Image (cartoon, rainbow, N blue to C red; front, side):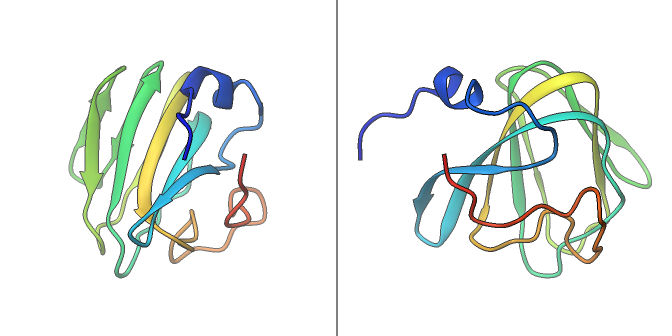
Length: 120
């Protein structure tokens, strides 16, 4: 595999909340997503998610606390934990999670549920 330039890959799309796969390893996908606004509350039954901020500010909201992240910071959301993600202004985020995870977890939403395995 050749190297991946994150700035180049992020420049290939503009829509929010639509993850793009840029790599795969050991049953996991490396995804890029642009976010702005508030994502619906949801959880993933068996999959953990890692969110790493590349650009901007991003937060993961839980029912009892909020985790604020800036560039170069990440957090892991354990499986089964209800959460939602948000960004007041556009942010660019890397996600590491098992392949074929539905981005809205246990919730199906006409606006936010994205197609899987969209590669760039």
